[in-house]
Each structure stands twice: as structure tokens, then as C-alpha cells.
Length: 110
Length: 144
Image 1: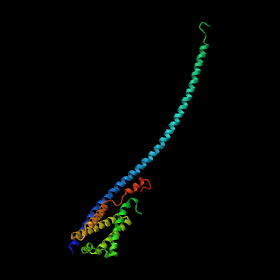
Image 2: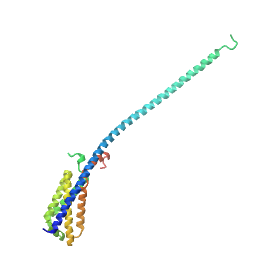
Image 3: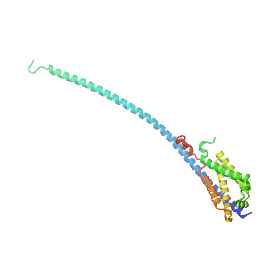
Image 4: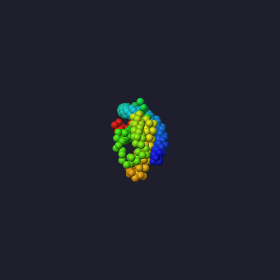
């Protein structure tokens, strides 16, 4: 057998051995990537849950804001009504007090 | 049906298809028209190993690469890539010996060594990426 053929065969053998070695590196990287992907998938599920929760909170927040505005409007109306009542009562009290003073007998009268 | 996360990436498949075509075309020409490889460098090469051996190695390696790309099998792909790298290194080594005889330039040595290095680099990387499914979830449609 030609020495050149032996050299080429040895090179081929080294190529196969080297290829197997780097192939194992690739397989390990693939496994590692799979583990990372599983973690990422779990995080993705958690992320989707949080996003769903956030959407619910946003709806609740919008409802709370609407309710607060409604209560503020109601409060404003009640204050307005109360102010009107106070004005009426105060006017009536002044009127009654003035009438009572008017009706008092003057000093020295029987 | 292979689960999406276990499917081979399109990059790996594309590389396998290109490598397969390279082997099959070269091997096919050697089979159909062996006389076209009659330069001084090739004649010296056939003394190192017969032309039939190279033809057989190229065609078998090319078929294996095509099967691996078709089946999306990482195991077959790695074996085929290792065989491809070994064949390329043997070509590089054989041409290197021809260069020492002064019958050829170093171009073929450089090219075949580079091809073998590319095969080994691809072999050292994951051929299946489970992240592609997640990426497609986050990326807007039509960007991939």
C-alpha cells in the first residue's frame, strides 16, 4: 500500500474522531438549549398569567375610576342640596328671631 | 408528526442540503464522466486512492446528508457531517500530497480544509433549536 494512501486514511480517521468530539459538544449544547427553552417556556406561561392578571386589574381599575367619578358627582349634588337646605333653615331662623324680637314688648310697656 | 420544538432548524437543513448537493454533484460527475478528472493532480490523487473510492464516498455522503435533511434527524445529520468533514479532510490531505509533488497549487487544500472546518463548526452547534418556537410566539407574523 502506498504511504500516501496511509497518510490520507489517517487524516480521514482523525477527521472522524475530531468530528465525533465536536459532535458531542453540539449534542451537549443542544441539551443545554433544551433545558433553557423549558425554563423559558415556564417563564412564558408565568408571563401570560401575569399579563392576564394585569388585564383584569386594568378592568377593575377602570370600573373603580368610573365609580369614583359617579360618587364624586353624587357628593357634589348632595353638597348642593345641603347648602340649599342650610340657606332655607338659616333664613327661617333669622326670620323667626327677627319676628320674636319684633314681638317683644318695649321696656316699660305692660 | 415531530413536535415543533424538536424539529431541525431551517438553517441546519439548508446547510445539509447545500452540503448534500456539493457531494452529489461532484460524485455524480465522477460517476457519469470519470474521464473529465484526468488532470495531473487528479491522476496523482487516483494513485493515493482509486477514483471509485472517492466517487463512492462522495455519493454515499451526499445521500446521507440528503436523508438527514429530509428526516430532520439530528443523529443522521451529525454522522453525515462527520463523514463529510472526514472526506473533505482526506481530499485536502490528498491534494496536500499532490502539492508536495509539485503537481497542483494549494488552492484545493485550502478550500477542502475550509469546507471540513465548516462541517465541524456546524456539527459543534445545536442542529435543533427549541427556541425557534418561542421566537415565533414573540415575533410578529410575517417577519420570519
